[in-house]
Length: 134
Image (cartoon, rainbow, N blue to C red; front, side, top):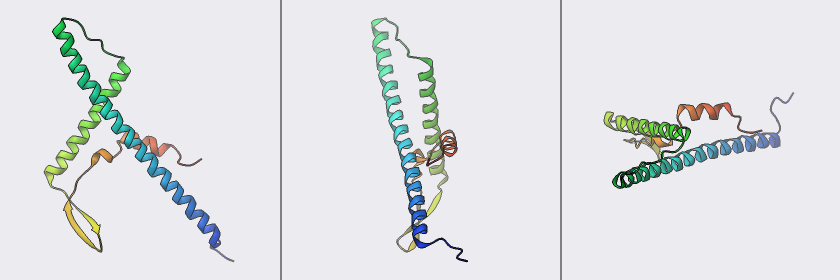
């Protein structure tokens, strides 16, 4: 006759859901951190290749370009970075306002729009296909 699970069982379910949420958040954070590392790495490679190309051209030589797959991945990430920059810029230009709860009342403030922390559609669809817990 008791429709509801017992109190200890509810606690077990709550702990399970909380653990699942924490793992999901940590996976997203790890992906964002890795993406930022790749962005910094790509920009470093891009700057060093420009400097090396300038030095090689000054010496009259030819610069060596690395593999095509790595270059394609760098170009894709570069396009994603540019897309995030453009979206941030457009959002700032349009002057979107955002409400947020501060204390007990709502405060309207200019949105900071940290779109760097938004996963791209490719990354989010891959995350949705993968189960969180096994």
